[in-house]
Each structure stands twice: as structure tokens, then as C-alpha cells.
Image (tube, rainbow, N blue to C red; front, side, top):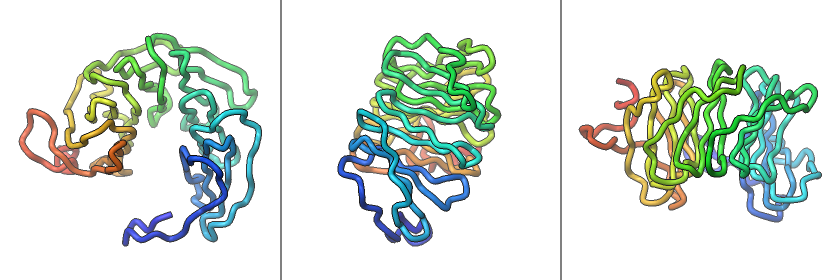
Length: 247
């Protein structure tokens, strides 16, 4: 854990016996869960750094973990790429190697729908802030948007030339950013599906991208062990990402 004001390390949580693939905070910030190659999910007290519990059950590496909005339940993904809750916590979506996105009822655990359209494995999935649409990122170099009520594909965003590793909505839902193996971050207009800008700077594949809560800045993480918070978009004058997104 790190102090975002000083950049100093606060504490180290140790307990896993394999690569830690993902870590996420509970909505109230009092606990944190981590997913690992060791097939376990560990839950930690963020104030003390002590392990609260270990969740067993998976038979393969656990790739991601997510808390429901109320913090009372949690989802972990193994064998699938990613799992995430809808904003209201009533449904959950999982991205799969079988090229589909599955949506589940969190109260019953029953599958509600399967979204088909991608031609390669689906690597990540994200709900829009209003929960009415969803984005999926795939190895077929596309990002697809879906209607969460009907399961129908709304639009396909094309522009990347490599696996799309991650896609996420801005806090207001008006734009979406995608990170790719092609070393680029693309930003899209969610109403039209049109590309707004391309952000360059990484020298290796971009694994994830995240908006700041105010939507004015963005961070991207790369396999080259770099985290970039400022670069210039292609075919535009030099600007920081803050300046560009604020326009």
C-alpha cells in the first residue's frame, strides 16, 4: 500500500505463494482483497495490513476480484479473464476465453444472458456508470458496447491493431478509454462510437487504463513497468492528458 500524497510505501501484505494478479478495495476502504496464482483470495485489514481471511475454492489461478457496491459480497474470476459488478450490484458480468460475455443475477447466481460477437477471447468487461450499457475488450482488437437490458450489441469500436487488454468508462459515461497490445490508449465517444484521440508514449503493451474520479486525468499501466499519466495524442499538438481531457 502506498500514500498517494507522498508516494511512500505504507505497508506490505504478505501471505500469497504465487503471483498476485489483482487487488481491490472494498467500497468503504476498510478492507482489501487480492487474487493470486496460488488459487486463493486473501482479504486484508487496510488499517493494520493484517490478513482477515483466506478464501479457497478455485482450482486454477485467480485472475481478478471485485466487491459488490454494498461491500457485502465479492466475486473472483478464475478461468475467465475478468468479472465485475453492475453499479447497482444486482448483476455481474464475466469476460471469457470462449469469446463471450456472461451476465449473472447476483441474488440467485443464475445466468441471465450471454453476449456474443467477439471473434477472440474477451479480456475485460466494464459497466457504464448508469448500468445501461457495458463495454467488452477483446483479443480481436475491438471494443464492443452492449445493451445490458437486451444483451444486444450496440456498436463496435475499431482502431487498435493488437489485443485490447482493458476498457473503462469515464465517470460521466460520455467517453471510454481502451488499452492495447499495440502500445496505445484510445479514447472513444460512447454516444457515437467514434474515436476522439489516440494517446502515445508507452514502449510496450498497455495493460490497463483508469480515469481519475473527476474525469480530467487518466493513468495507463504498461508491461514495460511504466505508469504514464501524461503524453500526447496522435495528430494533435503536444498537451498533457489533463489538458486534452479537460477540453
